[in-house]
Image (cartoon, rainbow, N blue to C red; front, side):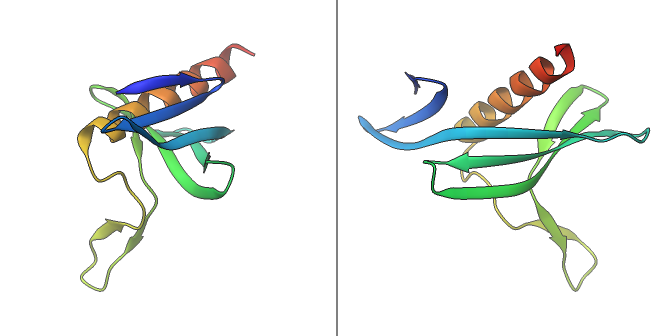
Length: 104
């Protein structure tokens, strides 16, 4: 469940607030292509995750978590939510902030 925490998103697990997304920074990508922006999020004013990408796919916008190329040539996330609900909440917040940035 997501609860209101000022401008931040809080994630509530078993009645305890686990984390807050306290800042979202959007850097638009100028070149043409599917990648529209690169995002950094701050968690609890203490931990930052950089290089989250906003991608325009066939079914709409989505986020791609930071990744690196493994020895086998495949890309693997280096930081990511561990459940679908958290990923969906994070994606919703980031895409909302991205839309706001387009309207400025």
